Length: 532
Image (cartoon, rainbow, N blue to C red; front, side):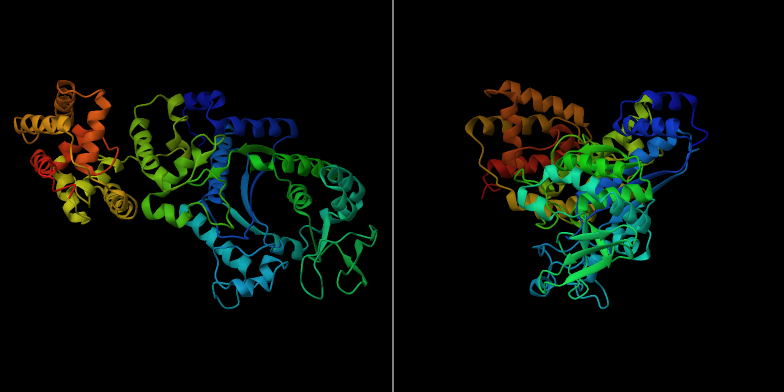
């Protein structure tokens, strides 16, 4: 990083790519406070199975961290902590975990005190979900440190700041009370004691506190007895807005992102952090992901894509691209976004090498690969492969490679491993999402005449005609026949020949699939065999 060309550094300082805009906030922070380690943090609530939104926060934060390292020539040390709030009490049983009845028996307990519903011996629910998150982050190659709230509270790492919280008790309440209803105002305390009898995280009022002794007193809601506990040593945890501020202050966090639904929470946590005598971190509010119905994704409901589901049908790089693009815009996160994300990734990768430095550092692949995008030859798009699987009526990778090798001479699964990977993704995606929805129809009279015309024109072309030559003929056919719009002709091609409403550039598809094979497809459509 020290040896970056000067033109790159100059371009980075003025780049409008959002990771650089965020990194410049931190550069200003360092310039004001002096050189020191910069700590990035992401938070994770492991009450449900990890979902892509959780991963997205780590991916985006990593992009900002890399941009900061570029702007500071890697002379300012940085760390990224992925913090799990696994000491939180379980409020409801997630819909998408087994052993629901067992889980209900442990409602209210910290996640790390609830048995693992997935059946791992000696494990806990919190540990199981933490392991799932870490396994993916490790698979993706993130550089991070994992932190557990249970460990940090119990080990005493938060003790000094918890005592500050106790000393600032009235000030913290003054920050929080205006945001609460009358009933909650009467009972609010920033401290949630862990009941020594039941192990449940209690939301009870603090009836007395002793800053010198470091204790609070509350009334046990079941026995009516007064109970005095220290706020240190893992005997209590903080209410989550206060808990957020506690982490920021104790660890001296410099940067943390949050969704737009948490803007007010960020504001309150920042005020509490100041009350504890520390500067709150810089931040970035990203938009939320939506499911297929436009509803907010919830990890407890499991209504969005899981990490594993995305990686069944597409690469890690395509997922990272989806996270990079328009982070301040709400986006649907469902299976139908995958093909576009895959092809967009390879499109950006293909254009990178010929770009000027200022364009390269704005290119998503530069941020996805931390400034070192790979060189990949991808002669066939994902959309094209999906249609090749459809038209060839084969889900055999060897058959598909027969078409690919003819289209791109010399290309093999061995010397094009990324393309071979894409072939596998395309077969799975087609099988699960395209084939079940395919619906062929018979051509209209206008379409029959146009298809016959196209067949004759294809017959007059050499078998190795390129996609552009074939596309010109397809256009000529559409213009020669009585279509209201040229778009109607192309939609008709897709519906009649491929059983779907849209598809790739048709000339390129024919070049890949083959002129003879396409003519056979037209003949079957005209004979009514496809619709049958």
